[in-house]
Image (cartoon, rainbow, N blue to C red):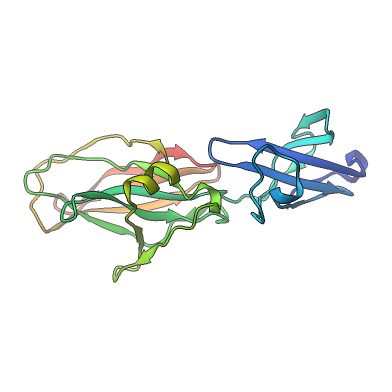
Length: 219
């Protein structure tokens, strides 16, 4: 919940924040802000019955706004985030869920994940993506025996529901990968400044090749 110092708070104000994949709206009454539904607000393309999260951009009236003066925000992630992988058997991309929207940070992003390489593979990357348009599109995440959740979209779904934030730094793998064997263990976390971080451990070399490295800032 957003809060503002009581002596600064107008009787009622509105907030709106236009992001790359969503519009965030909140209503502030008596210094306390709460989410509203876009169906209750006059916008060009209202999305009915979609709960939104508060923003730091406040409107005292439809014509007057100010940014962040005296407001604090609960530290939550506002989108689902996943890493894009490639299913070599199906010959198509798939997405592994890392952080769910509403997650408070700083936080660990679940248990460690293990990745296999193809025969002779010498490069590895972790492309981070926003998935599902902040809950507007239903994503059928499927939990696998490893305890993690995955989604394999069709081409149209992928185009409509996925926004790539970072294609990921390319890690050099030496010696090259061996097919069918776990080679990398990756532990993800979200730090206090909302950056997604990763520690990448080479199981064959028995050492970290990235330690708590920042990948991208989440929204």
